[in-house]
Length: 193
Ligand SMILES: [Zn+2]
Ligand SMILES: [Zn+2]
Image 1 (cartoon, rainbow, N blue to C red):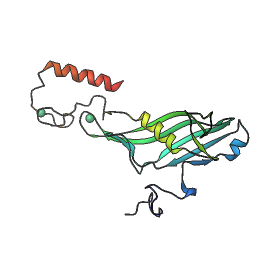
Image 2: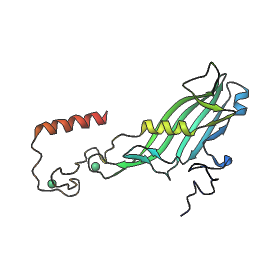
Image 3: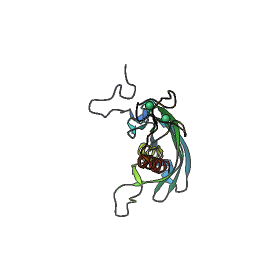
Image 4: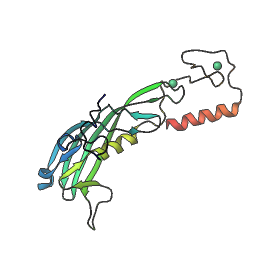
């Protein structure tokens, strides 16, 4: 099946290449930059392949959605708003599927690269175009859960027989070593904070 994200990409261009007018995260800001204090609202959405960590990802066919206000200031552009995406992953206790939505609040700057007074904290503003994809990627990665649960009271897998204790109760004796039980509880607390 043809992949619309790479279909027609010129030789040598990376996967996900799109013609300039179809790059959903690129915004022209020449008009904003003409006068500091100008704002505009941008709604953009597009695909960001390979976004996620080991057990939690934003599927390659799920759009990342940006609702931002762009404002110019003398040194560049601020982008304020929300980046949201649907993620899927595996429950850390039972391995079952888990889904959720992240909605990350962002407040970031874009500034020209180069020059002695370069803003090191800002995303690069190249010419009069800014690319919202790195901002979207960073914001989503920060908000994705590290170790999700399918439900808060997921019973997990039986350590003895491997049965999923949510759906197939087994007859195995409970784990007897209290040291491990204590460690598990600590680990769960850690992961939840
Ligand atoms: Zn689970
Ligand atoms: Zn069992």
